[in-house]
Image (tube, rainbow, N blue to C red):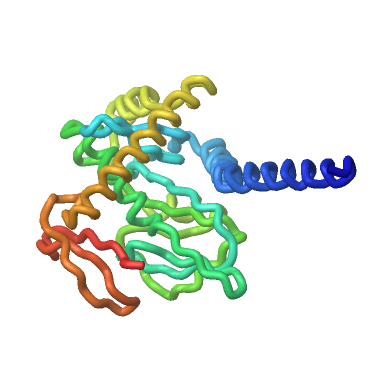
Length: 263
């Protein structure tokens, strides 16, 4: 083989590997960038008032042995604010109850899990972990989009806030009733500090276990679906026609609301 041709093929191969590596890391980098920007805004709020205390990158233990990863929590006299950060760009369409939202960039459309539903899962795990002792504490769901994204749906959210970073302080100031006394607040601080990642090595190990658990759970769900069983409750799945085509759903609906679109 010609030497120049060989090096050309080698460079193309290395470039392809590099491009694939960058693509695999893109979501992770964008997510980290989004969390950094939101954390910066949270720190400004925390510095402006002693009534706010923030916690970042928490892994909440769940009853099944897995963990629920929460980007940020803000503790105030009014309750807990669980914050899910999404660093998307383009137009975003969605509502409170749909399983997926849609991202539109020019003519390309991509679906992603509804962050309100995602954060609802985080809050459920947090409530279970906090236990009956803190059952009276109000917990507010907050989804923060970066300014690169434009939320286009004209909908009202009854159980969550969908905002941009600069609107976070405004959301916090909407709640003025004191719900937590000083002693309870200190107890919450001590408890939440136990699930914060302390160093990079610990973060690496916990994230690895977190991802492995998610992958195992997805494989188990796929096996259930292949057996035509609902991965949530084990009941039989049925095929129905919907607005966007055929989909599988649990035969016990509305008791169980599992659905999966058929491609």
